[in-house]
Amino acid sequence: MSSTGLIARLTPHQERILKTLETIEGEISTQDLYIQLRNTHKTLGLATVYRGLEVLRLQGLVQSRTSTDGESLYSLVQKHQHYFTCVRCSKSMEIDACPVCQVEAELEQKQSLKVFYHTLEFFGLCTFCQAAGN
Ligand SMILES: [Zn+2]
Ligand SMILES: [Zn+2]
Image 1 (cartoon, rainbow, N blue to C red):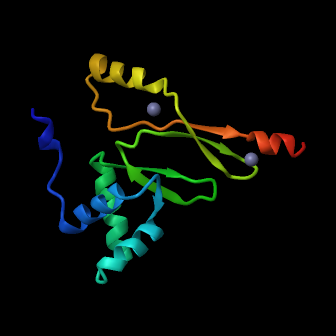
Image 2: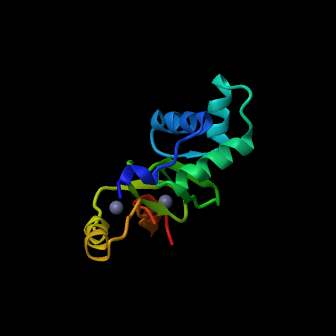
């Protein structure tokens, strides 16, 4: 089976969402993405953006995570990045290392699974909040 067969054809709206995500550094909320898309495509509805993101997520093109204030943040899957989030000031920091890539390779090789992406998040206190007192 060819792997390209897994990807269904995208609608113009979905392609537009994908293209916009390509121009964004890091992550974006559905609402903010909607606002950006509206600048150039006035007829686009918020429901279309929600649906489009979900379709792209199910195809493994887009990933999402929930921020500490409960908002869904989206980014392209190829932006493989993990974060440490401070529970006190909610600041997120990028983590460079990833031990999960090895596990991912094993899942694909030994169990023939197709892994789109993985998530790994760290939570705790940043150095500033540790110093700011207990
Ligand atoms: Zn902090
Ligand atoms: Zn990783």
